Image (cartoon, rainbow, N blue to C red; front, side, top):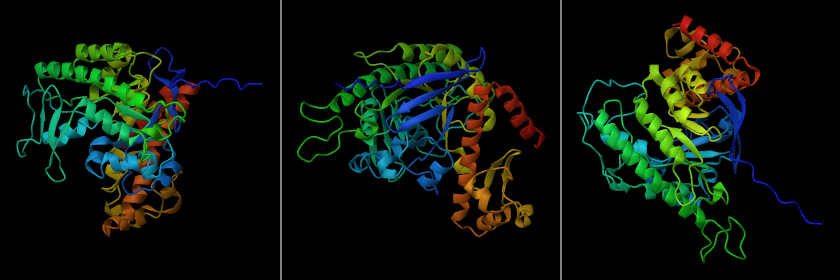
Length: 435
């Protein structure tokens, strides 16, 4: 009797739908576990969510973590992470992992500005740069030359370099190298940049295909088994024998025709039989137009592939993005604001450093099920911040990450039982009434 052949589950399957709108639930299957979508993916930029143990991230319900290729390339080096067994093993996280391409950091840190969701779009300047800083990044059609924000050393990223770094990091989901633009860039520059990003996307697919072929087992070896005299792990081995899933990134700023064109192009792009496994939606987006812009993109993308919205984490933005058809999201916001004493609540963000917190001997929220709210009071957290104790950042980050993860989990449940609109009205109505 022979064993029946095993079938590999599809990368993504759609579940419940939000009526005739684009919102949906789904499952994203990776070598390190299945992600139920919509899902919030906390950011561990340098292979750590700042101030929080990986075990705590698992306990608060995070299904996956995202790390940054740019930062890990500079420190400790993607070769070190590869030698350690890949990103998950290096950081002590057993679940699915994502890495972004490094394109955002190369450009945002190099040009002297940081991404914001909404930027003044009245300028027609084609070469945006903060006036008080030297430009650290220079773009050409082949790639980007930049200086490290750590020590000023010169480096160069191309699509091929980014793919190599991400394969060595070994995440389950990786992103194509793209050029970051802002709403300050002119229409002419947006068109030029988009053409460059589209050309880079094809090069990413080609290099991804080449690197993935290297992990195919040779005769007499097992899939994923290191080969060669040093038995060093092959690039990205921790992501599984098939390699990581590669997502193309849709740019186009606030221009409908550019966004739709970019989405169609990436959806149809094929290089030697290789297509994108999913898609990221990137670039600076005007907050008030987020749902509209995401909707333009999801209209053009294939229904059976996952969509990741890069850099979104506020409640109103998450509701808008889920309704418009985005499946996963990442954002540094919950951990970043936690370190400055601000916490998410059902009534909106609150600052624990205000004087009235000094004698408030209750949790941040009574109905929150996070570790922090189960064990500590606002008065204690106020004291930790006043005393500049490191524990303050740990406890507030746990709470904030749990708040956002739980909120998106509730959205997923509401999509399944048909109460999404009610959940949105209740959640946002309470936040707005408290302002």
